[in-house]
Image (cartoon, rainbow, N blue to C red; front, side, top):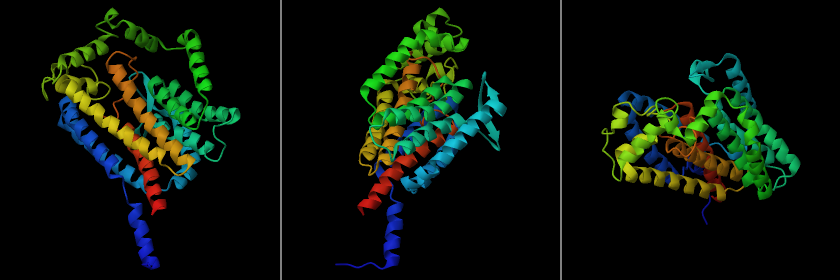
Length: 368
């Protein structure tokens, strides 16, 4: 039987603390590398260099968070949530306006606080439920809904409906994983459908145009329907194998709008075809599968709820963007995760994976 000195034991713990799940790390590296290849065609080398810097910063944030115990993350959650609400209020008061929306703050750096809400909302709901009886009672469910609706409502006012949906969904996913009854979820869905005619009157004109354009994009082909029509042309013209890297006419001739951000999946479909899109989706599927494995193996309710909710939110990112560029969902400005050009969204997504890796890392420590 071997005996370890205190120094050796401490050193062993430090080594275990730095343990990172190699499969998830490899899959994320493959995804961002594929994304940079497509971004080069969509936006050129300048955007690729900027994106690479942001991805490097995102990976650094991920690796740092992976070393922090989930219990410590839970302790800081109320402060992060409060900071997020303050920043969202600050956006409405002194934020930068761009393209008809006030979504940005400029404090030395320019960033989008609504992206931070996608992370802090599931954290605060999981924090609230972590020591309570599960499935949650009606009272706890009501409190959780208030916690998630406050940031979501502030994001709606900016206005940014797409991000508000993701923020609210991230919190609802925690409740779902906590065992919220199906009948409650179904009743909420039916209530939302029943309230749709009333909510329609509260939508802004541009939001109404997006819904009407989804139903019939050809009704305004040179204005509201332009994005969807050009995106469908790009996707359809790619065929099975695509036109080849840097050979997409919709992108290179500038027919396809926002081709480095919201519609970058259309660029990939045109240049790499069905095979290229299927490869990307397979990578996403593997990342989701591995993340769910980590969530299911978590050792406490907070870790399990937050890892599962962040994984589901990542899936919704992908689902909304894919549905948006193919004309199945309204265009709501949701980027393709870790592929679209962006700053705040990349850091937020990598921070989410850092928390998932923290859950994995902590489980390994307990096992050791």
